[in-house]
Each structure stands twice: as structure tokens, then as C-alpha cells.
Image (cartoon, rainbow, N blue to C red; front, side, top):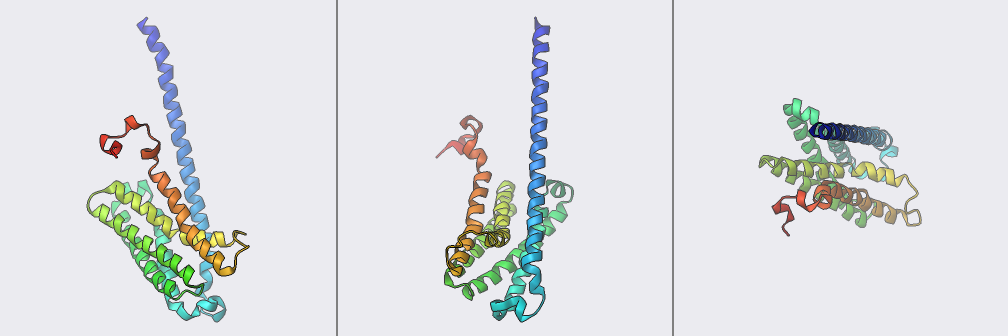
Length: 235
């Protein structure tokens, strides 16, 4: 009888392992596709919306020529952050080459600092009006604060909090890519140009940040109560 019981339970255990293995494979594939898509969008953004500013002509800058130097520094800082941010989320690089992870992280934060500082200036002198300037100023503020919180967390050994704040920060870094993609769609074409740019200026980071927050808090939201610690269950 004991032998039969063991014989019956072994296939179930093996099946459970197979399901878990397939689930990990699917999740790995989804992550790879996600990052490949993100990289592709970033490259498309750079080649179609950024590269022209390296041609120093009145035609390239248009109405932005008045703050060309600020715009170039903004592009430089944002490009550094956008490029190095991908490496920050590689578990293999972080575990095998921790020094590389730390130094790319420092240069990433430097890119954020430059990009945000110049964004503050351009928000005050926005060619798209004060309402768009407010959206840009708010985005830059969130960009800086989330970076500061990520640094504070890692300096105090709170690595999970650091990872979450860096995730939020990179979503804000990617907002400029999303802005360009939304601007290319027929979204809000019934509005005036200034109204449309302002609406997209808010949507390009508030909606992705909200979705990211749901993802980061998914375990606390959707996990059964018995799987959470007593601290997490307290109101």
C-alpha cells in the first residue's frame, strides 16, 4: 500500500516540476522580448527624434534654437541614462560584475542629474507654453526625487527598495521615448497643438508609472493573506 502511494505521488511531483520549469521559461521569454522591444524603441527614438539635433543648423532646431546648448546637454544626459539603464536590470551582470553595476549606476545617475537640471530650465522657457512647462517641470521633479530615494535606499542596505525606486526612475527616463511615440499617433488630434502636446506630456509618464506601481506591488495586492507577513497585513 505504501509502495502504491509513492508510485501515485511521484508523477504528480514530476509534473509540478515540469509546470514550474515551463513557467520560468515563459517568463524568461517575456522578459527578453520586453527588453528587446524597449531597446528597439529607444534606438528608433534616438535615430528619428534626437540625431537631427547633432546637425547644428537653424532648420534642425527650429523654435528651440534659443536654448540649443541646454537642449544638447539635456539630450546628452538623457541618452546616457537611457543607454546605461538597461544594464542596471541585468541580474547576471549585477551578480558577476558588481563593480560594473555600481559604476554604470553612478554614470546613469549623472545622466539623470544633467537631464533633469536642463529639463527644469527648458520647462521655464518652454516653447510649447506654460501648461506644457508645468508637465515637464513635474516630470523632472519626479525624476530627481525617485533617483535620490534609490540612492538613499542602497546606501542604507535596503536593496529591494533600491531596486523598486530604480525601476520607477527608469520608467521616468523612458518617458521621453513614450512621448515621441504618442506624438506620432492620431491621439488627441481634435485638440489644438499646444493642448495635444500638454496632454501627451502628462500621459507619457503618469500612465506608465501607474502601471509600474501595480507591477511592483503585485505580491502585496494579489498574494493570499496567509503568504504575507504580520507586518504586511497590518493596516
